[in-house]
Image (cartoon, rainbow, N blue to C red; front, top):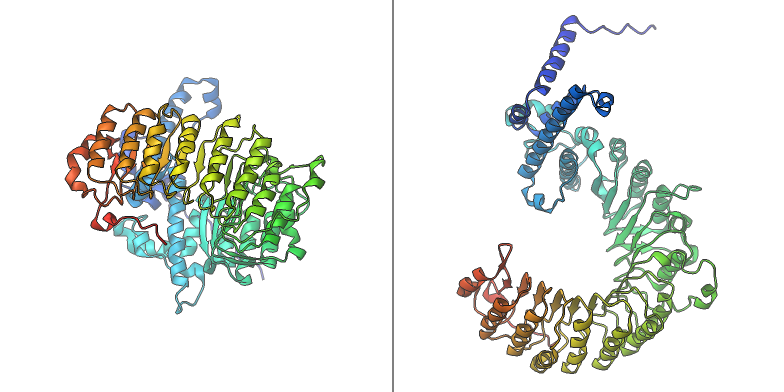
Length: 603
């Protein structure tokens, strides 16, 4: 059977099309102020269509050669592009005013608008798909009027709803604007990946992936986004060995050693990997993806065997890992069988760990033996700048292993160390603080919070932050009035580098205020103080106000919450209005009677 000939466009159709193009051309030639008034009344969908059909007949070759006419035309084009950009910014602020202050002048407001619009559509569709009564195709889910009213005029809603009511329309039409996306497991289906073929995803966050049926469609989406995807994150997921293998195989093409992936994160999830039969694609991914900078397995049910496998793989890999997070797992003993002697003389010793800048081992049940092994491992991390060991019972023996490391490596680049809640004593911390003076590069941030140190540690603390430390956390170490009295008596030289200090939960009473009154004038760069829950009496506030009046610093925040004897904020309105920074009160005072309850640090 012969195919019937295609019907030629009618003359009327061609005339209407020509008139439309001419009208758009005339509109585009309007002065910028008139164009701004016109587009300012267009909803998002109309503004997009107007911009898509906008004729751009500016001879750029002549512009580059200096043609005066084209210089004028391109000047008009830039002015009109500014008008369109401002219109998209206004539409974004009208719809999401709470986000506008957190954005750093995005280059393209239209991209940002449609990206957030699509996320709203996807989130709403996920709610519908999760209902027990839902049956049908995901992409046939209708977008609600609450969303449509932002992109269409209310007068045209009945017509527009017929055109763009289904989720599929939004994914197909606005998918090319999509760079970042969050997906629930219920939306990890083949039809979603097919509708997002034209998108150029850079960041993808997956939640509640707990079944193999969700992994296969996800892998299709990863394969088609492999060239642009730079960040992949899994939250509340349960990933089997096969799932991880399939995911990593989708990200890394065998035989090709480059990919754009920079951040791979699994947190608050469960990873089920047999360390004796590790997924080959997972190992290849860690070893071959040279652009990978950040690897996170926070609270992911890792044991020491899996952690050892990951660490050993990274040690000999060609990736440029700069951040490794293994926190909130139970990995005690993870370095116990690692043969340091066998790698010290190796040409590739520390090949991948040479670029490691940040290591997070918080809450991993590490003990003093783990700290000793870690001190050896630190020798192979010459670029490490930040180490979080908080929540690990390493005790004084563990901190002495760190002292040994610093003694052997006075040129260490480590400048940020968190030893909060490590079951340390006063003696161990004093020994450690005394070690800081031999370092060529001073510490910037140190936390020894929530260790029972007592007042005896006061002198060592003053010596440390008057020399180098920029941010110090000594919250809940049991200073008491005697500790603050000792801090004040030893504070003579001041601190030119101190930026922030946390002295909360130390029950120092009036001595807390006396110490701060002496510190504030002696620390010109100090911007933040947390003095909450210290049982300070009412006269403390007046004492601190007198100190602020004489100080020449730039203090932005002084937290006084939880001090039971300080009255409600309204009682100090005059003082609060006097001490402000950029229109915000410097003092943070209790806002309700509930916050007047003293901090109880007695278990």
